[in-house]
Amino acid sequence: MSQHDPTTCHVCGRHAIGIGVGKLPNDPRWLCAECVPLLEYVKSVRRWDAYEVKALDAVDDATCDFAAEHGTDIAEYDDATRRALWRCAIQAHQDGIRRLITDGDAPW
Image (cartoon, rainbow, N blue to C red):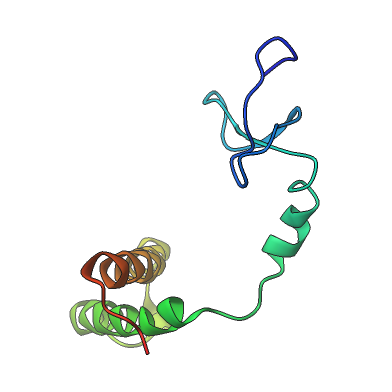
């Protein structure tokens, strides 16, 4: 982005400035001057919303299946198995949120 190639803020749609977030070499998601300070607050979110809490059911199911296959003592897992458990939990949570939203299942 340059002053000759303006773009909009990824968050709110206002005029973006030369600060962006994302991984290179892809085009970053540019932000406006109003949204840049909000990044510090986003990192400190402590309360989960209702969808995130409800999606824990999917995590519980997925990790129970994982433990049934690999055993319940995490201390006995090798590094690869332990990392696979964390990937399983994270993926199940993300998929659970997506499923709740796409299926229209209200979590309350």
